[in-house]
Image 1 (tube, rainbow, N blue to C red):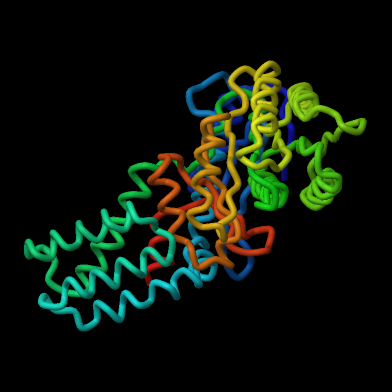
Image 2 (image 1 turned 90 degrees about the horizontal axis):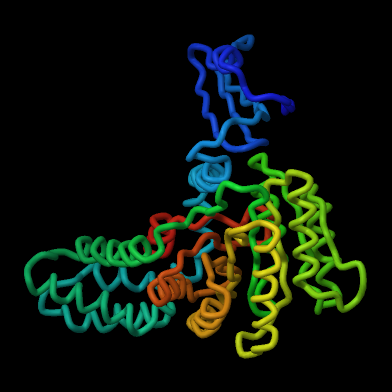
Length: 384
């Protein structure tokens, strides 16, 4: 049940909500914010947990609704993420299954041959030459130094090396949405990478956590883009702002959407943009105009600029990522179609190369299959 409270939550209300045996999490931010209450309920024949949401306003505080929202999305997904990642990265895992065979009967005299074949397996899965050599040479040094004495120890060291690369350079995987409404997320990328679909799935995830979402159809070049986004808006129960006339400027559409979001007190505006090749400089400059347009309405926006990359392209995504980052400053990646790719190592390559975190991965066709990226679950999924 969601009820709207026109005034700040009084101490009495807080005391009445914080009953013994209940867990209360208060997110402080200018209105509106969500205060989630979980309390045990007694039912005939057993007990259960009941969750309610209260909408109230609170005085400014360092911890905001958006900060909690980004964290909540990741934490709630964690319970299913290993199962979903396990299925989503099956083709990459099949490529790397040879590693278990290599290490099963490993002995010291066989080290160079085994490491050469392990190197080949990593390269086939698109870990990239730089990362692969770094990992293999580190393993070689530790083996000859007597630090690794069994196949299991070598595999654990391999997994830890990959995990370290992901967590040191791409640790900030939560959405950073600031403290001012509306938060603005721009989705960018090349044609056919899955931008609009990713935006729709992200809207579904944000809505399911209680955020109000407004979509902006900023892809004014592709005729069917607006229609596709309207289908997602209907499917997720979001309002949408589209161009009122043909050949409208994308920056104008996004500016209008953010203004409306600000007027209506919407939590998040999701901005679609036209697909463009990273080599098309005039279209890349349009992204700069879009970025400036939303910043004029909400200072500091966009809060996130997420680049959608097609996982089936493997290491070919790196030039795209570099160019987009130089032009607009990418804050995170969404990697799509990884369920159909045996090149999952590109996840590690793109993080290591650019130091930008992967925030979401697409591991299936379903609306729930855009998952917050979890480095440990990813490593366990590709190295069973």
